[in-house]
Image 1: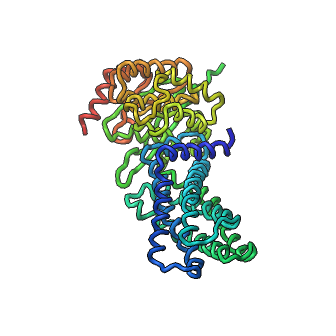
Image 2: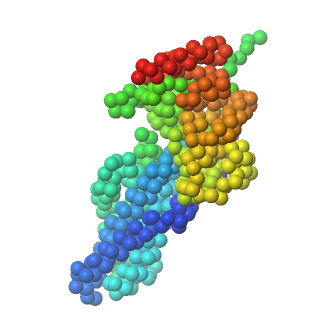
Image 3: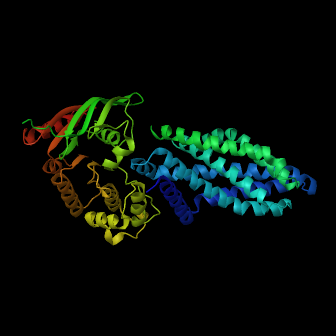
Length: 223
Length: 241
């Protein structure tokens, strides 16, 4: 059985548990929807300022909601002792990381499938475009890569609900900027080339953090 | 003709493990030949469970060295883990997956071939077939412990590490566990277990190691030493607490 099969098996297992419990997707989608709704009441939305503030509200909401879900996803694995069961298996620790990151990617992606259409309606913006798919995928990869690492780091800490956002949000700020700026270009009808530099930043962020996080993760697992 | 010394299943030298200010393993040395059943005895806090976690590679030592079957475990992590099966205090199962789903998932983690066959064999071995499609959450602690035992046996490990495996088990299951341990010995494989049911363990074991505050107080292969002497050594560590 190859490494990809092991990664997929861990991701598939997380998905199965999520389908049964709906712990993470409901938390992420629910929290993000609440943020969107609160902002629509807080801001006097019109066609002009929706394009200006909408992308920021969307991605800040998803980032904040993602923290809640990432915390939950890892806590479940630790509370049941199953993370240690995975550590007993003759697989390298980076495969565990990549499997868990895949699971988190799927949860955040599913939550976005719920949140983004609601965002489009509330802010009256056209977002069903290929550009949005690219931005969403790149941002979700980065969130999952960083979030899985920091969730593993903070899960053994007593105040993990506080620790994870303190670690996660500052680190993903460049990725958030890339997501907000490129979404801003998209809703203003600009071309791929206008958002290219932000997408490149997101790609670089994703590559760097997947590689570095996989390396660091194995040291975090050892006590 | 020179007789070859039996290969050591475990060789641990000068193991030190501290949890904060508390020293749990204090320069512990052990050598365990292959094909033996060893029981670790000692009072609470003697270091038995920590030693098993260290041998399972779940807890890192502060200093010292461990080799298993001649290979340094620090340099051969995945390969060494493929040779060991562990049942520790917690069953470590996914509560919202069925017994079958748990075992099939872990079979994938151990990269086994013919997964369905291996699951069928090991579940028959530990007697959990009737509840294969029950969610783990609905099972008693003792039954979960048996599922954990099945998981640890699936890949036919050379070394079985059992931390109080009989806790929560009924008499029938304890007898079945005894047969599994006997099978392991007769097939030349190695078992290291902790227990507080000392008399039963001494019936199963070939060797007893009494740990006393993180050090080996007594290391005795039967029948070189009277079992009463081992019981006395164990009792002295418990009453000294």
